[in-house]
Length: 325
Image 1 (cartoon, rainbow, N blue to C red):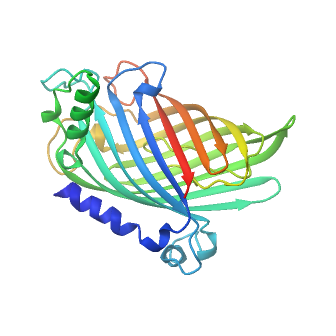
Image 2: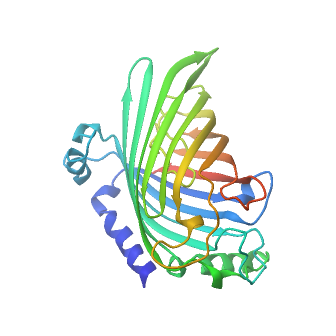
């Protein structure tokens, strides 16, 4: 019932009038894409998004008018998002509760993102403001998805879903800003600079600080940096008439984590939890290829230990396919 209600809410969030012209994206995160294939921790994430430039009278411009630091004119793009994430301990074939590994958890969510882009001859400043509402627990459908997929491909059967976190509605408000200094390296465009972010809610509470560099023939017609959970992606719009283009990305980001429901357990009732580490770092390496109205991005992630009992770093990747419709 909870998952059907969230799906209905996601459909209501995407009015038909917004579907006239925009970019549809499908994002898949999985440890399969890493060099060290495993089947635990952040084991899978899937997200569909619809991004577009809102019209002058679109409701998101009126919303931005009431937000600190935003105005109707500062909204360059809007995205509606709907997705699911699955988290498990390393040993998914163990039926008993593994007390020194992370809890089993599924997460189903719908989200709205506003994007702003301030361009000058030397700098480009990207802003993103996102609100995600969702459900953690059995109602998210994580058990159903993983069990059926593993059965389909003949992989190891997950046996511990009866230990998963309890149902809990969630809401997370997140803000991100990236500063990109625009430069040249030989005959290629080069951008580099710092970024920062903040997330508040009963799912995630953290602040982040990082730095990134991008290199490619043209960077002024593509603004997105792939968002890796717990972050959301940057502005997914890109030039559909640019012919063939490519770029490479390297980014490091550190987070001070005050809360992570997937590690701390349920907020209002007793559940499995582990000793969360306050400082977590991500190293992201990847790139993208654009061809007219299509874009394909792949990023691999090395994430430092998130809880005290964790044996080592996590490795996974994210693949994003986007197309103008």
